[in-house]
Amino acid sequence: MAPARSAESTHPPTVEAIAAAYLDAAEGDAEAAMLAIIRDALTDLCEAERRTLRRDRFISRGYVRGALDADRTAT
Image (cartoon, rainbow, N blue to C red; front, side, top):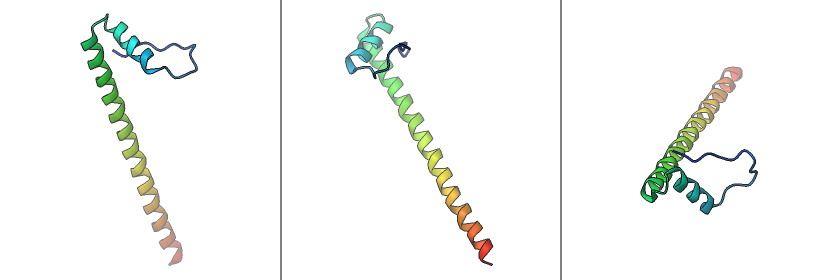
């Protein structure tokens, strides 16, 4: 239920603009708009956490691989 974004805007929207867009998308229903905002925020937060965990896993694996490669060349 996220509001449509304008392709012409290069500036990040203001809090007021975001709230107005959600309220408009919810056809004036403030409760539905608030629930949609929270739902979208939680979805974005979960996605950011998933990406962080994935990145950390890659960093960890790269560190271990580097250590193993160094051990092989030393022997």
